[in-house]
Each structure stands twice: as structure tokens, then as C-alpha cells.
Image (cartoon, rainbow, N blue to C red; front, side, top):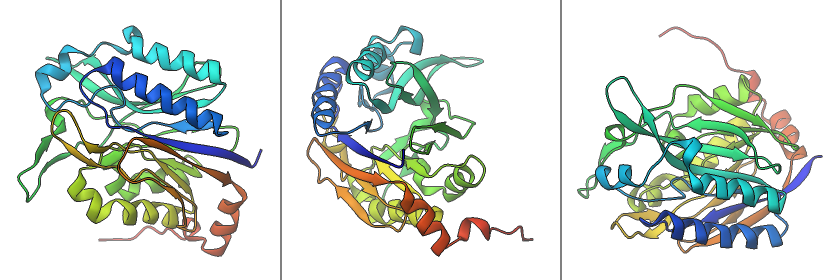
Length: 276
């Protein structure tokens, strides 16, 4: 199987998980009717909450999460690979309870095929006064994760990971990834400046497809995200792109393009160790 139809579901998640999952399900069903076999949702699909106490109050452990069970049942019903860009789950650390920002790939049988916890924490102070401290609420992941799809190997990442190219190099060179997933909730300011150029760079430098579902618009908590969910081929060509409203986008993925582009620019084979 060398081709498939992929879709990104773009959301504007608020504080109510049930409402957010209703909207996600509506768009997932629309994307499936359009022929999508792999459907990706954005980071923080189930809830978008900046207040730590309020966020923790609505979370549960993965095994107890009814929203996840709902998404598993939906994947099985629709016979799709459903990639939940991320959901948050309670996890115990040595001295306190925090959350994992976790991406989940669900098979057409409704089973969890892969889990990835976001490695890089978005701890930044922007010039416009916006401030984020993901590490205050989330435990960072420690492991790069890939998964075998019927059409290729998927490398799982989340949002701020996009700025760390060595992760994608490792996914492609060491884990054989030829499709890169980058579900996100990029801020409007940083998205306008960097989103598309970084997405296309990750595709070009690794000769891989990039599929990146995003949050978009002004959220209930006041945060503004950039949107512009995007699908890019290994040459850096944009196959589909959204604006900032909730929607889905889709594109036909021809995996033979990976071999063509990697043969034309075989940079993955040219990595060298060097001294500093």
C-alpha cells in the first residue's frame, strides 16, 4: 500500500471536554466521509485550559478517561487510524501529581497503537507579554516514538518539539520514519512568524511527509492560537492548508514521493560526526 488519504482536524478547544470531543467527532466523521484513512487532531484536543488548578480538576488517568474510550470506539466504528494529537492525563511523580501531554495513535480496531509524551516543554516569555510554563503542569517525556502504519512509519511529536530538528533526524534515521506528525497549539504570534517555514523545513531536511493538525482562533480561556493546519510533502510542497476556523483539511499521500525526494537529496545518508 503506497497511497492513502490523510486529514487534519482543526479545533478551537475550550474548557469543556465533552463539548470539545463533540466538535472533534463531528469533523472526524466529515473527514472520513471525504475518504480519509488517517485522521489527526491537534494538541490538547479535549481541553484547552491555562489555569493549572482548573485543568487538573477535569483530568483523569489514561485508563479511566471516558473521552479516550469514546475516541477508541469512534476509530473502530469508522475503521480509521485516528491520531489524537494530544490529551492530558494525570500521572504520579515522586512528590506530586502532574499531567502528561500525550499523543495517542488509535488503530482501526480501537486499540492504542502508540503513545508519545511531549518531550520539550514550552516555557517562554513572549515580547507581547504572553507567558507559558508547561513544566509547571506537565511531566516531559523522555522517549522518541514511532509507529508502523499500513503505508509507512509515523514519527510522533507535539507542537514545541517542532523547534528541535535533532528529534526529527533521529526519528527518520534511527526509527525509519517517513511520515512526521506535528499536532500543535501554536500561539498566534509565533505561528505567524515561524509555523509554515519550520514545518516545511522538517519535511525538506528529512525527505518526509509532515501532517500537522492545529488549534486555531481565540479560545474560551483567552489564548489565541494560529491554526493553519497543514500537510506537506517531502519536497516541501504544501498539499493542503487551513486558515484559523475549525474545519478539516485532507490530501492524498503518495508514499513513493519519499524515495524520489530522498534519492534527489540524500542528506539523511550524509550525516557525519564532528568535533566542537
